[in-house]
Image 1 (cartoon, one colour):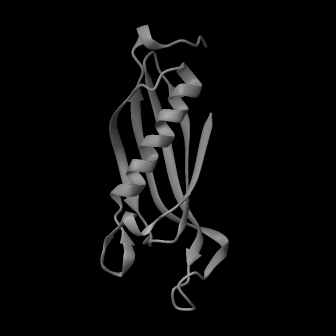
Image 2 (cartoon, helix red, strand yellow):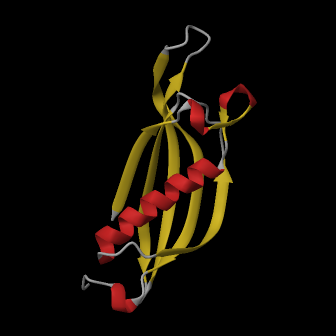
Length: 128
């Protein structure tokens, strides 16, 4: 099972000088991806328990378009192991003008993570 979200980082997402978006925003996107995966898998939003690993690999700026993707890698009785990746696919080009942007020839991986979610047995609505 996979989930993919694509969205534009806005000026309100910029947390630091130079319109830099904080890494926590990628983790927030992974939470949204995890919620969709749990709904697909179990018919319930479930709960995110813990991240095993989070790696911030490249900067993200206001105006960039990010794809956040996740997949379930292991299904236990109530636990769901997941892996996530966020990729920059379009970059803002303020050096050209205030509305210029470029589609990247290859996406740039900006963040990777893995973690575990739980759906209590009594809330699971789908059988495997």
